[in-house]
Image 1 (cartoon, rainbow, N blue to C red):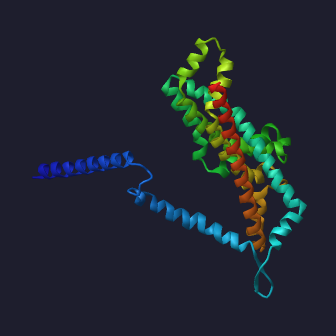
Image 2: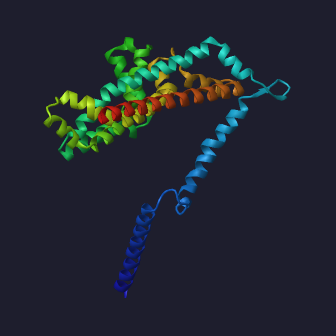
Image 3: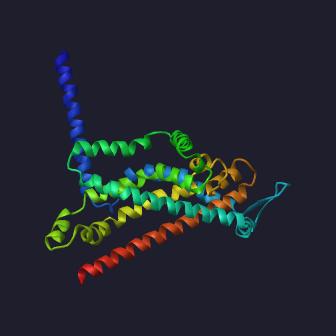
Length: 302
């Protein structure tokens, strides 16, 4: 009797998973423009609206408030005016941008060769091992990683702590996996027949790389650059511990305005300006990537 019940139970479980797989495959075959699978996206949309969109809307409106000592709230543009009239705030914003740019460049210079090497590895065991080693730091708490980096740098070259070079070094170590992984995925899926055809026609390996491999990985470079640039501009932990508290970025300023002071409305204005600033950077990088890909297509058509 028990065996029969087990068989019935196992058959029901198998039927359930079989029907579920068929339903998932059926959904995949359908066009994403139809509303048949909208209920699958709905929970994420609700969560994103609750935790991202709604707070940003509140932050935007709050940036126009002026709370006086008498608890009277009035609308004003003074918060934005104070930001653009304060040289130190503008300096911190552009310094944060420069740190982010140098971090992105360093991550690309060191990360692209690593991703290229991994994509050309034929031994799957070695490839998996290297990928685990690259992604392993992401599994560790960021504060622990930064403190470990600080200890190592203080032991090897203590004069680096408290400098912009030390901050960029810490940023690069922290965020370089986010540059390597998208580039690796792109290079690993590239059409290698194009490279073989280029070499068969007499092109050198370097020429093939610059004309075929690199242009085809521009989208991955764009994705990696965004994932490195934005957090490196606002990272509080890395800046605080790698600079010894002597350097501030826009993330530290926002923390001070919201946590260590009562300038909430001014902090909201600074946050909105930073958000707009980052959005412009994303758009500019995207346009540059599209322009380079368009030039590449024109060159190939000629």
